[in-house]
Figure 1: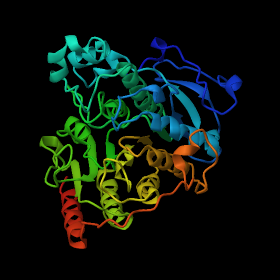
Figure 2: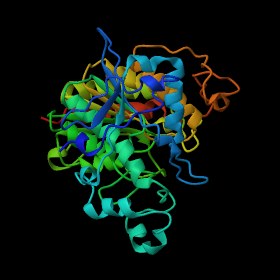
Figure 3: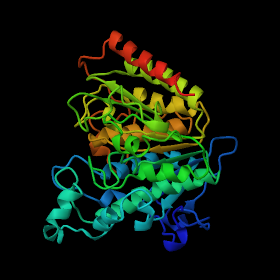
Length: 413
């Protein structure tokens, strides 16, 4: 079942447009079985219709001192979208909160109940469960944890519902994309796997769904969930070799009915725009030709950018965005999600630029004054310069990876 809007009353969103609070609830509607509430509608005659999900509370959640995952980056992104003015060209939604029952469409009942009840104040009483469900240093218990999961999951599943109902062409939920969460445990800063839940929703109305992951970390939670089916193809481009989560080998291609429907593109340190696109475009062209998906889910993790706090790639924002732009050329229903990204000023830059790309805009490099301008100094530009780090991905290595994957794509019947 999709999320039920009737369970959660539509809530006003007070930060969807600057200085226009009083107009915020114009055209707000709910629909039976929908996972969303309309906050403000902008029509785009002759253009792709884009639905944008955002909850102003998402930036309040805090993993803890020193933790690299900062939900505040989503608020920074949203504020840039406002000040560039491109929010006016999208339909804006505040997601309905995902319920525990919605989450158990993939996750175990026991794990979801644990997330619902655990708090910083009572966690010392549940040490065995903390260990069992992997809620430790990487995945701490923090204030509002379950509400955080409800928000980012509600956006992704709510977006899938809109795509199912053919109410939009593209959905954006930068708060989503938490690809490491497993059926029965947290992993890699991720608690509920909103991507898996969104894909399960899409499968109600689409025979084949393609998942693409350009986060620097392997999309292990999503791949594992669909490893034995041919109804979902997963394609992950990631750093491989002594790097979290340690999975995603070139030879991991799926099992049983899912054999050759998992694609892993293992990369080395320092990959740049040119090398990345030499792999991405031919691989995705072949996947689109052979698999012909009815819908695409795109995880746009920004930790693959140059200078990321936890990353080791050397992509520019334009190079990163080129992957998303390429996928829009196929004109297939598209769900775009966030993911990793730990140098948060660059995450906000990247997701703002990519939102502009989805709308057909090349945003001006000089950033408008915004609420977080101090983060973007001294340059105050949208684009960032790659470093001079060595690209360890030799032409020979890249060719070998590309050829092996293209051969595999010719194998499924």
